[in-house]
Image (cartoon, rainbow, N blue to C red):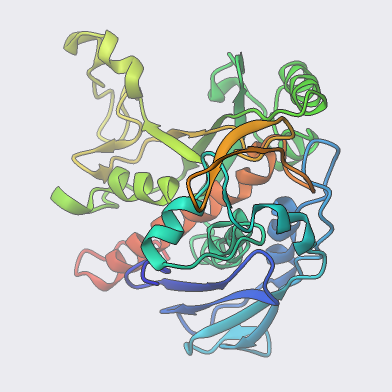
Length: 361
């Protein structure tokens, strides 16, 4: 199976399945001498792990990371960093009923057609459980580019949207983490939570969007043509399970404006009056805030009866059982941040190696 490696200089390879013994990865290209704060990594993992509240899956995983190599006396050695996270609370019997059935909007059908075999237990490799490895790598990446701030929050659930511009929100970690849904506006947060509970009680699921803000990023990050900064961010976001869309800056709303309305006029040699560009022009950061939205679909496993087919093409009835998220959004916030950090650390390390070294690491 190809496609399990992300990054060019700072590279992470991941392995493992939802109901396997463990998940883990190898990080290559991490600079030596970096002091690693293991507690910070565990905090990020705790933000992603199941069982946090009544609006996520109750699967009870510790998600404790064990480092096997590449870190000595609390510092990176420059050698590959190996890590592993053991699965503790999986119930494979909950998936016996789909052994020969293709679930709607899952990867069951496509995996079997591509590989001739599939792991039906929790989706195997296609499960979002795999993202636990991304959070480990992303947390280390954050510690390398510590002067760049990455903030994500839930900005919509179904038809409930946060209307307040991010510039007017309290985007402190405390404000976001105080909300079960990770929305920094208490009023909107309460509406979102009630919406999710209502949908969950009906046996259904719901999607929404996550907004990500990148602050304090220097100008000159990114590569033109095929390796544009926004293109790599888009690829990173679209690699996350359940993601259906990505837009940065003015996004689709920018199509409603004229050029004179949309142009970001300079007010100094480092700032623009507006930021419809989303901090990126020509695929390269311009020093303004970078902001983008990521759209997540409703979870495909629902507790309602649906028609589907089995391996022989026969129509059968299917109803989900077991433990599943009614909405992936609150647990996806640290995943979005981690993938953002992995993109940025790669670009920053490339810039450091170039002759235009601005000492940003």
